[in-house]
Length: 259
Ligand SMILES: [Zn+2]
Ligand SMILES: [Zn+2]
Image (cartoon, rainbow, N blue to C red; front, top):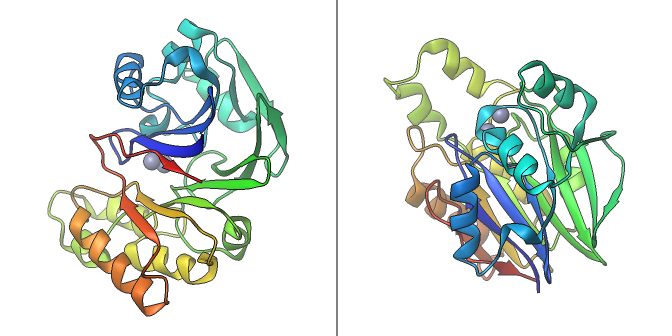
């Protein structure tokens, strides 16, 4: 079985599992080791199956459970030098830390993992393409605009987890967020709005895409049903209404999406 499930998605914690048979890799570990074990169990998976953890960037919602999980199970962690140096400075780095160059191709276990740079306010944020044989699984959250490079990197994927973070109007009107934070989220190094997410989809959707998962949805400045409705409309307008689409939630494990 080759596929992907979101274990947690949103500003309170992100963790995605990619599976090839009995081998798993995680993209980010922004949930506790205890929660991770519980969530894996929901899909009859076990922490001993995790062969590696690939980190997108150092923000807490992506690394809060990283060190404990990796150190307890001696799971190798992969990130770029800038992110690794930051984690070390903050004493959040695991023992088994391995560096890659953005844009390189890492063969690990039964996966080939390709990190690529995205525009975000981390020290050196990446998104990932994961290949199992000729199947391409893409996980791209935490970036501020639809750059050509990002669109290019996401082309031809079989499974896609893409950010649909906020509704611009809801963000502007949100009383809970100070102006400075709003500016940060809306900037080119912030997060993807629903509209920008659709802009990327216009370039990336293709007839062989099996599942689209929308993630890192804000609970204050977006709404799960709004994300779903808007994306469904966009899919219909683009002639992809048959595509399986799902919104990844903060507190619930998603189904396993397989190729
Ligand atoms: Zn994040
Ligand atoms: Zn971030």
